[in-house]
Length: 427
Ligand SMILES: *Cc1c(COP(=O)(O)O)cnc(C)c1O
Image 1 (tube, helix red, strand yellow):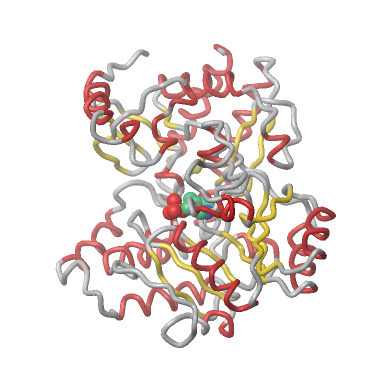
Image 2: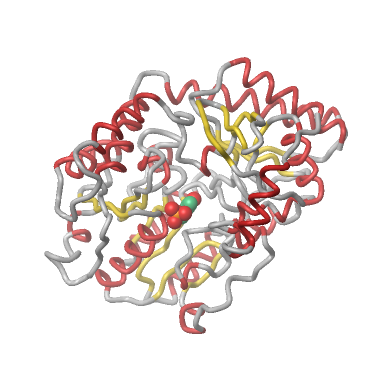
């Protein structure tokens, strides 16, 4: 069962002298689960292979983008066709227009959309636009919600920051840190109080939080959130960087029946290449330069390779039964994890929406960041390590969601379930 990871260890040793912590994004270092990172060499379908040639069933999916699995042949072919025509122009291409049309078609609240290269850029641009549109300064965010690494949004930011036990980040000015008003997830009275205090340009929410672990909104919360923001003249910004094309083709807003003013997309829309987008009401979006007074730009925005990968990914997700299958596979996995924990006498609960889910090591219910933090992190770390040793790759944090992909076979799912049962018995 113990796999040799000598090659990963060698690369990691070298990386630490060249890259801070040896990684280009902090959670990848796996410190919080008491492991060293595995350096990946290749992926195919439901599987990833590390530098030592070990094989893992992948429930990370590059943190969300790979809903079709690794190296999907049709996506690779689309990228190849685009690549042969040149990799970037810094001038508009028709592919960007097709990409915009696909997003507007999928998400009815999006009347105009602009492509960017990361989720961080999408949220920071949407909030600048919201400030420009409303002429107001304040932003409201949810405790434990992650919207990328923009200064003012790193306050109470869950995920990476939560995992590493950082209160936020050094290097953020007091002004930026004071800026966002933070309210707990699922707390409507707290939200109403900050809105009533006035001057709120926007409320930004993870449509279904996934960066404190998966913690869905309570029934009625999204609809009341929509009504309250409208009543107070604040824009509602749905950060669907994780949930867009993940929980449904039209994102969480399709499930909630809510029409946000602005929506941020990322991860899946890039089909595994760096692309993201923000869009929404035409009257708000038309305030962007060059037509309006809010500046926003990007050298590689709308990159043709990323557009091609994203468009092909969306096309394949439109095939009948895609989301039903994801839901079915995810339910099997989530049920097996919970049953396995119960059988082993381990306190646990599962939150799941479609193909995003988290096994929390506590009785629950987990309804916000405060309750998420009551989880037994030692036990999560042991679960992570046991699954890795059995050839299953999980996100290395209790405060993250696992994702299934359409590349998983029924026998892959069986293997994931039995690995979990064995691991849970052992820990
Ligand atoms: C991943 C994520 C982001 C940040 O996207 P990057 O591409 O990593 O900058 C923003 N919001 C949410 C909800 C995310 O899950």
